[in-house]
Length: 96
Image 1 (tube, rainbow, N blue to C red):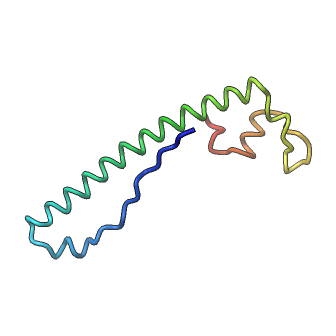
Image 2: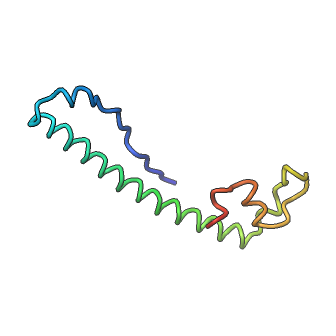
């Protein structure tokens, strides 16, 4: 599986940018905002990928009833339902 990551984004030196003349600050601000636009595109792409991967994994988990093979840590017996398994083990995936 290949997972792309958002590029590292160093904290800009806003004090230095504020100290620049307007013409010079324009280039720095343009670069920052261009980088932000790119990161927004990467985040949206990652959200779509995450949704698709989560959906496929949940569909297979329901078909295979995989939760029946994992112990519910709160009661010490196998999970009785997919919903319970998701609520306990994967709360971010349960609303899918």
